Length: 529
Image 1: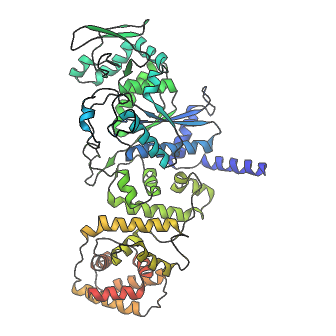
Image 2 (image 1 turned 45 degrees about the vertical axis):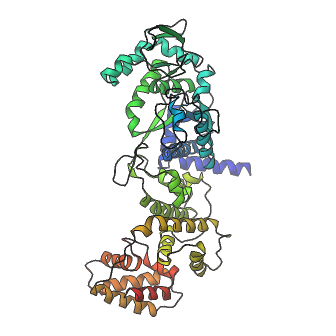
Image 3 (image 1 turned 90 degrees about the vertical axis):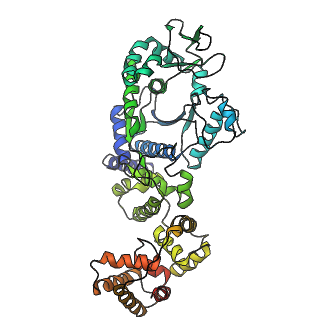
């Protein structure tokens, strides 16, 4: 048995080395980086970063999901151990009060203090940073991610960054030479990679450094209120680094092998990489993903609130559809708006339906492999999300039992208990219909040409057996469209969608009619004529 298992593992690894899906391509880059042998630290380290000044968002999910996909791909290609650090920059100063928290006045009194020193406005944890860290961990745990949480405050205050901070101080002029050309003239006058924590106010200060003592590991700045010189250690959490220097320092301290970041951080990656090299480190393999766009094609901004939140997505579809969205074309800018949800849900279902019929080499490039780590659930039904959505639309469904009535006619043995994922899809479809479709639903009257074609369709459907299959029904729908003087078949299907369903696009009509019922469809046509 062991020999067979070893053989299967070798076959899987061999095929994975040829796989074209991007997580395997990234995993092979990491293997090349380390020369196909374990680094000195004994494992390959993946990192994702998080700024806990606000609650976790859909970008956080995307970065951890994609990094996890690469990590899993690497684990197929190699037996070298792996770790994933989710790092929270919770020692950063609170620069502004978020709009979506209670007790904003409480936070306003603690501006510029480290997030782990700011009181929790929710009154659940010792600090605002700890509250948001707990939210992040709960958020990641809910998706089953395997990671190790790392707190910036704990690393700085525990002295675990001290040796690397001393290297930054020793190479202060070189770090400044990297950073100053990237700054505006005004910012250059006050910039320092070190941000002292004020001994009296506890604030994270952005002040010019007057002098530094490498041997004593201290820096001196001028207090802007008293004018006096203040000397503070750079160790033990008395200082933190500006974030680009912090990023490069972290790569050196942890010996990070792989980290992703958005297109907007390309220049930051370059600067942090230079700083990492200055202090004797090797920057990680980087992966730049494109940014999300809103309904109008504009870049999504947390401050503008013009995007889609993870809670909104999960209101209308299961989390696997969001994982599929994150897998697809990460280097291409993509719209992140409500109307992309049904399509991505259906594409996920299509790939899931194909999975068990594929050869192993094909499975490795199927998104389903990366979403479920090679162990996907069984497809429960051939029904698509868009079919259920349009069924909810035609029935004006309020209750899942209405849709289940049609489903059990299509699949007699089906039930919510036996097919829980389908039941979840039905509930999501009803929610999406009521919130996103119904408010914009507009039926139109058929033209004279369309009336004749619809009457013809009604007659031909009446001649079909009540249990006619989707393909047979689809052929009838096509034949009707071809038999009448439509400029193109697309115009005929637009008629069906706009007249019968009250929307600009819709499902494959043969499948929809099979599920909805031939007699019900005939009645629907009669009501529009």
